[in-house]
Length: 234
Image (cartoon, rainbow, N blue to C red):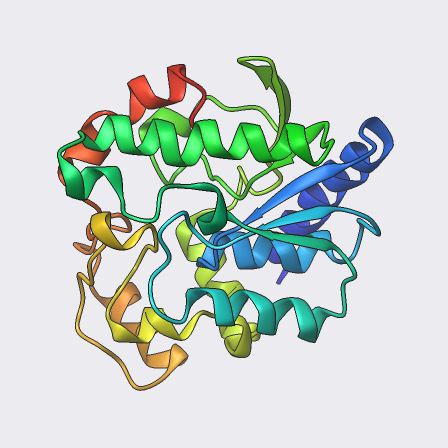
């Protein structure tokens, strides 16, 4: 319990700092486990924000989860859907590389949305242990001309799972279909057996240390993450 409280305090302190430093944050809420936790914590600190809903190419049910969580948390943030700012068909399905698709439909689209909405920082739920190319990030910093706020950096995958043991109703039901990480539908697949409950999903992961958190992501996406981040990817 002590470790969990400490994690919360650090994240809330980062968000409080962001509230003092910035006037109009853009919160990225894909509907995944990290961004749902991020929104839960941000709802306790940020009165005003723009929330970017879903992935550019969301999995079925992803948007419904996002709107349900926002309603349950009672926040009054302005919502904008990612998918309405990208081509109707994923470029990666039409001959583009994964790198080109991610840069165009995630990074460039996000930065354009932030500019159009007058946002002066982007708040994301990335973590140090989730991917090696994120292990050197800071809580609040500027890169590629954009201020980034990353309140969950110190949370481990196990820490996040512990949160959902306490708040099972907030976990996206897609995880029970066998996903351990959620992203756009062309690049994400289930990688563990489906489970009937949040508790069973978490227990399976904890009992199988060989399961990789991003094991369902396209390998070519994982291989170019470092270069994508140099281009501004979060």
